[in-house]
Image (cartoon, rainbow over the protein chains, first blue to last red):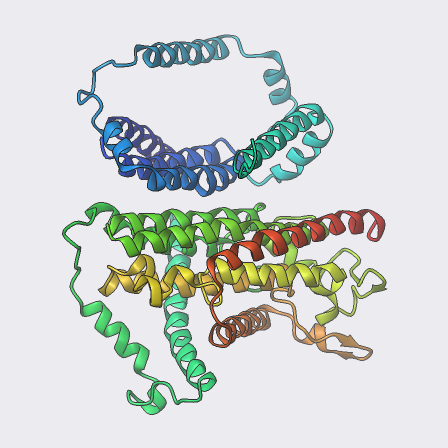
Length: 180
Length: 357
């Protein structure tokens, strides 16, 4: 049953992603993006990353996607028509750079997968032998919190400073400029 | 496989309960509105109009599906389902009684906050799919409001969670009554672990949590799009808001989602701040009121009665206060509630370190 659900989520994620990029109606494409994000969140649950799954829904669905929809609905109709009248063929390549990036990313992923299955990193073998694995009933939030505040404190702080900068920048951009 | 059957049964039971709750809540709301406005409310159908909502739902079920010709058919049909499901799946982690919760998730409260935010997508879908100016404007207002008020609501909840130190809703409830293994302090001074009752609830464990609950309550009113925050459905300006074009069963689902949302936010507030299934009666010396009134059936009774009381207050506020203007709405959220919620969160951190250590 679990395997069945896993494949169901995967098929929905990949299928709707393909449909999304080939769709001409932008609003429907955005709502399909919602389906993609949701099924990817489902896949995270199968990787026992329940916190990441819920954060995905909270941040991407509740935040980013709503903002994208807002930006779309508030933007100029002419601009949208221009966007929607792009190339009509599925295999047309107006931006070959994108294809290059996509293919090289796929190559990196496949290479990593082959490497990892052929030569398993030592720390994975060691912790599996020691029985240090996460179980579905474990409280992952506690581990996350403790590690964020000890091992990964510097990256955590750097990210928070970056976000703060983005916030200040956004607030500055929305200000009315009285005198230049 | 029996397992999955149980899950489905639980979901069906919850749906039945919600449908029944909505029927009675609509009737109660109309009667309450009548009382506030000094009239009688529904009186014709059944004794004291008690069959009015059954008649209404029968009418809604019989109606045909009408899709406006200019509407986006798929989005228009999907929207009510998404709006309802986003609220309905939140019930998966709500504890009803000691040991009785559909799913005892470690991330309970976080999960609820996340799935409620999906509601906004459904509203935008309805607004855009209807292809109608009023619907789109209503949806925009609704979503802007929901996204803004999620922030004070979420931070007020975090303030309470920092005190309880768990995201599991069952454990949050457990730590507000006599069955806890921790020491509970009334206002940080008086040990009430053995006394329980009203005194051990989260709102009374620290004085600032009372403020946090008020913030959460106001923000939750805005999240259900209810008066005084109902500009998305302001009928004097927008016809009916995002559900202008809906009729029949689809409208019924949008309406059901609104009442489900009311119940959901009320029960979240009850679980996190007002002790969930814990009894309000404390142990006084030899009179072990708290011990006597804790248990499975008592748990369900206390959860339900507290939640229905909060829902009642939501209705009372709706028919008493006038609607806020859009700019007042936003400045209330960003200039009053959000800073206060942040203050509560900061006090919670200090409280945890200084008082509860």
